Image (tube, rainbow, N blue to C red):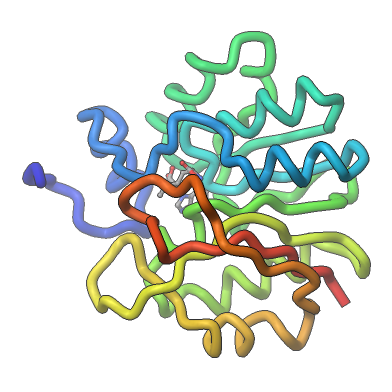
Length: 197
Ligand SMILES: C[S@@+](CC[C@H](N)C(=O)[O-])C[C@H]1O[C@@H](n2cnc3c(N)ncnc32)[C@H](O)[C@@H]1O
């Protein structure tokens, strides 16, 4: 594990440093199968991808006709995403998830390695913002990382804590094992869909 100057994952500098030095162990290098399967059966949606990193999912969903926008507050993450996205680069926006206001109503928020990137004390704010950004019936869909190790990122959650955070505003309508995880998440992540109540 390299030595880094920035230790606070709540700052863009933390993520900038890791992207700039090519230390991105969360980076899947492609689109997870569960999202591919979901996209094959769901109609095209207006989707937001918060904390998008390299944002492979943005190009994949855009190619399928989805109205996809990806945001990240790290300039280096945004530069990485834009460099790899070709004609979809304009759909990546440098923005803070807690301040970003979508220009149109969302059908879905896609989650991967964003909640677990933030210290546990921030999770109520993440859950509250998800609920604010989604109207009843809209979906929070993606990958959730379950673990109890204190140190992170990634900061794992328990199923009980996730229920506590989400169940007031969301109903879990899908919960499945993941078979193509990268090592850092292997055996500890699940594909889930939560529908806004
Ligand atoms: C662990 S990485 C995951 C990246 C991507 N979702 C993936 O699956 O590869 C977490 C990302 O969230 C971004 N991030 C953290 N806090 C953020 C915030 N408040 N607003 C926007 N992006 C944020 C970081 O810059 C980083 O790119």
